[in-house]
Amino acid sequence: MTWREYHEATKHTVESLRRAHYTLDWRNMPDPFRHYEGVPVLDLPADPPAPEIPALALLQGAFGTTPAADGPTFLSQLLFHSAAISASKRVPSTGDRYALRVNPSSGNLHPTEFHFLTRGLQQWPDGLYHYRPSSHMAEQRAAGALDMKLAGGSAPIVFVLTTIAWREAWKYRNRAYRYCLHDMGHAWQALALAARAMGVDTFAIGNFADDEVADFCRLNEDEWAMLIVKLHGSTIPVRAPDRGDVVWYGGRANQLSRQQITYPLIDEIHAVTKLRQSISAAEPALTGSGDIQLPSPDSSTRPFGEVARTRRSALDFRGGNTSISLAQLSAILAVTAQPLCSDFSGTRFVQLYLYVHRVDGLEPGVYRYWPEHSELELIRSGDQRVAAAGLSLGQDLAGNACVAFSMIAHLDRAARAYGDRGYRYVHFEAGAIGQRLYIAAEALGLGATGIGAFFDDQVHAHLNLAPEQGQVVYHFAIGYPVPDPRVEA
Image 1 (cartoon, rainbow, N blue to C red):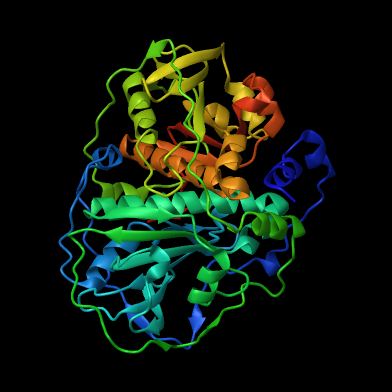
Image 2 (cartoon, rainbow, N blue to C red):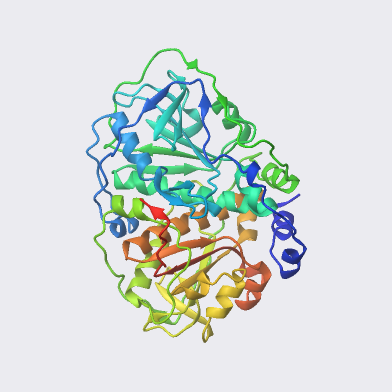
């Protein structure tokens, strides 16, 4: 199998949806929380300080700082604003509650797990840890001076972000791998932004030998390493590293379901995207310009800590006469053009197409965004609300939003640069852009939601895209959210 065969096989069409006869087995729903039995559990201080830097300034490249003077407080602040539970939602019919998190996830199924290595953190033992968001604690899987070579250096903190595809496949079946990659991009950027708000640089590494990292972290067989993120910065409270021998605590990973269903397409696409040899530099990005110059971006003083914790995925948007300003749209678009720090993002593969419904000063229509010049190019004029909803599998929120997006990716160009591995990188980038859209929208008093389901080829036809111009990998929508009374912070 190649990435292309998987991508084609998992496209949504009217016919494929008609053929689909699938009922969710709620009794076999995967546990959204992984934990390791019989390992030491270290407390992370409750209610850590919230980063005060304005979220929009952070998204535009500024750095914050942190008052954390020790490792536990630093880790608590970092994880509380990137991976922790942020709210609960009550099911009216049963009274049951389920958790919402800072980092979003398709179907709120959360396939991403946060593992991290520390070396020389103040008042924190060196070792390998797994973050337990259900209790905001760190499970200690190993202690001592572990070799940090997997991050290519001596960073004091290194995260290994993994995915458990079964959590998404339980609901979305073969298409689930796409959503796991989106979620990984969201988690990566959530971590990177939280670190930046604390004055810390991050760098993501996608160029690693999958099996070696899995063996090093002793991952369960249902869990796959996807990204390594190393942290550097003067605000990290450090000390001299430990010199003791490494002690592994073992600990068996919990079983997530009574039965895990195998999806061969997912196993095959993951296998072909594993790294087998060095990857080359990417080709130069495509450039161009439009005919509408965007104004100076709008501003906001809402602090990142507040924005990160209150971000939600909107279930729908208020339609009618509600609109956003062109300056707000300019601010939203500007944050997507900022650099993504990784070994695969020197060239960007994703371009934004906008379905403009209600933006003051901008006629309804489809536009292409050219970030190099902060310009929009009109592709199709006229009301796009019905089209946007229809292309997103009939989901009204894509039409009720003020603006919706198609993220069009140059998959062929990514494959020429990185082989089948490039399929992961494209979706990571789309998820990272989505996370920046979420935070920007929340900072401006708006709501947002990612949409992973769409009629792939119908999107291409609507946007008049030739095959060499890319394929849709993600949809997104921003507007004024309809309140959800079931959510409690």
